[in-house]
Length: 367
Image (cartoon, rainbow, N blue to C red; front, side):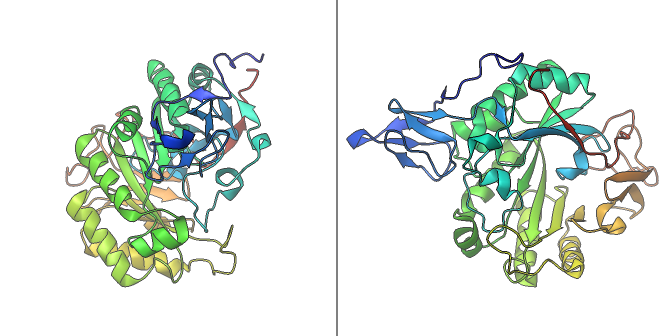
């Protein structure tokens, strides 16, 4: 057995399920509530019925590890400029036709999971590699709930923070509470602001996501930022953007950053054109007009749209050129050097990191 593979099981026991009549069991982790017979897998692919119970089949197994800039998650107000160790597994509990990580999130092949590591090994190696945080990303960490939580606990013992990059499609109650209790930050993929879009293009529903966002903002200490991939003709109308950004300000407050990112043709939407940069600029202006203090553009080169400005005096606070930081005008306590207004976020009193745009793949198995 490789060092670091201790306690890794291919049928890891889970708690959020209940037995049904006729020998089926229902998974209660997410709103899909998959009802499975012996040997069947849920839509997520990684939770299955074995021995009359729901187990996680990918505990301790990853599609790969990589050190990224934290801004790539994207998180612009959480330890800017610092390195973050990113990893995911396989599968997903949504069926997004436009998935940009389909090779992992839609994978049905176990050989996708080429790397392996226990939670303790991930935490130890993160510290050794100088990472300030660990991100559960590439596919949705909700579906590897137990592995993510165990890893988060091990990271916190090492003083390393944890980030969930998620669509927040998780059941209310204990599943949601337990998962986010172990996260320091989350970038939530708010895919659109219409039930039609969620039903037609993701196979899910909008309301559970909105409910979970309200929970995150008002009942946890998790730092949250939102991302919306703007797809031409699907979720990029002025009306939808107006309703979405107004809802965010009303229910989550003006300080939650919003990232509007460009779609590129992929997975089952290869005939849809890429998002024009002007669409992202339009979304950013609508957000500003509705009171969002920190709207950003992403997946395009836009220094203004990627930089952080003071919501009160308008001065540049954090200059960004892609993932490279430039001028920095925040004080040690996170306030504007020009007018003294507080910039919402999680900032290091020592100032920004200097990781820059580097992407560094790493292998943990056998380490």
